[in-house]
Image (tube, rainbow, N blue to C red):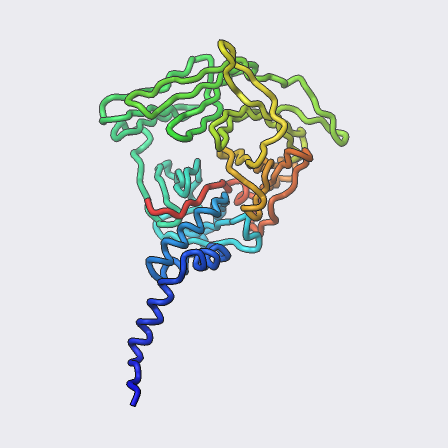
Amino acid sequence: MMKQQKPNSQRRDKSKSWSELPQDLLSSVLERLDFADSRRAESVCSSWYSAAKRCVAKKHIPWLILLPDEDDKINNHWCKLFNPGEKDKLYKIRYEHVEFANSYCLATYGHWLFMVDFWYNLYLLNIFTHERIDLPPVESQLGTIKLERTRKVVCVAYSKKGDEFWNQIQIPVVYGCSHMVYKDEKLYYLLNDYIGSNGFIKILDFSGEIPQETFTCGGVPSNSSSLHPTAGDSLRINGAKLVVTATGDVLYVEIWATPFTSLWSFRVYKVYSSGLFNKYEQVDSLGNEAMLFDLGITVLANDDDIVGFKRNSIYFKTTCHENNTTQICLFNFETKEMEPLHTFDCSSQQQLARALWFLPSFKQT
């Protein structure tokens, strides 16, 4: 007489077979999952957890974080996440120890958010693990970062090692820092004089003991007198920012906008050294990259690999003060046309004005 297998043995064998699926088969299944299902798959077993992490890493697509309105007491502890590859979904995340309605996201780095609350407390927040790191008060001189509150700006000094020695960025008094980008242990910053007619681009390398200036370039393009006629209106220069590409190139990006509408355009220049001279060369394509204008970086965006994120495009926020509206848009660099990214169901335009891109890596740090 054949011996019947015990039920618990059947469950154990079944569990073992699921955890030992061939990696190529497992990857082909997990690559088709959306964010929520991928998170569930991670909890099946250690093998699925590793495979899910590898699959998500391939989908390195930027996301948007949307904070609730300042007067939204019901959703105070909730924020929303938008993945351009899943246009029909908005993910909601709750964190009891963060009042999102009373906070602003100043910058992002990977899945870390640099936040400031209504009382000017600074902190770092990992949006997925809920890890929070409270930073010293603005006037504090303890730790490795020193911040001094002034009337117009926040001045940052950096100490590589120890608590007593400070290396402060020296900015000439006739210039103000209009934009900064930090990438790969380098700080890129744009200096403009107070009448906006001239400026400099500088790069500081923070990989050593003391920050070293490795590049400086003056005479940024100034085309404020130029006009682009379009549809009965004229585009005028409305500012400039620095953008660092995925390959490390430095771009100087001018914003052109109409005075009374939300129509925008861009001029992009590559900054490079040629012997003893620094040059600005106008760029007519971003290739297989997309620009996150607010973050000052580009990301790889091959349309065949990343659904929902378009190559050779600039992603930005535009505000029409006449109609008091804000949109998240993309500017097609090839056609020179802009279009809304998505129609968001928001309680007010303030949510879109406070939205910011970030790059989820889903890695344990």
